[in-house]
Length: 109
Image 1 (cartoon, helix red, strand yellow):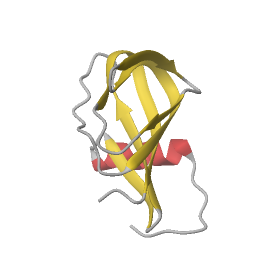
Image 2 (cartoon, rainbow, N blue to C red):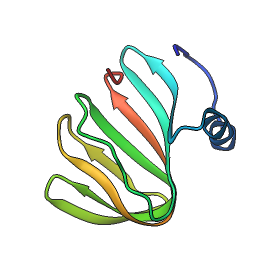
Image 3 (tube, one colour):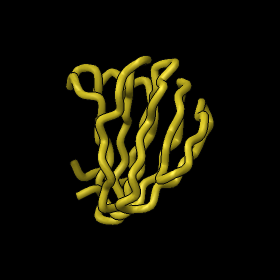
């Protein structure tokens, strides 16, 4: 996917992600960055592993905890989390369905 100068709506992205049957939907990819919508149901496990790119998360809705390296914090709607490349991180103790915008810089490889 390679889009530029486009507008996106979270509710439309959620429908597209559901139709694809995946927890992650990439909706933007340019060389400098990529972006996606990541959803984890309450009580689920986050299977992700460290990435080669820096990453930023914006929590649209939901409640959980997130561990980044040795730090562990409660997150909820409005939380913004920066994860440096190759740092171990994951969401856990997901109390309410988590819907998160994810931004990779540069684009995820």
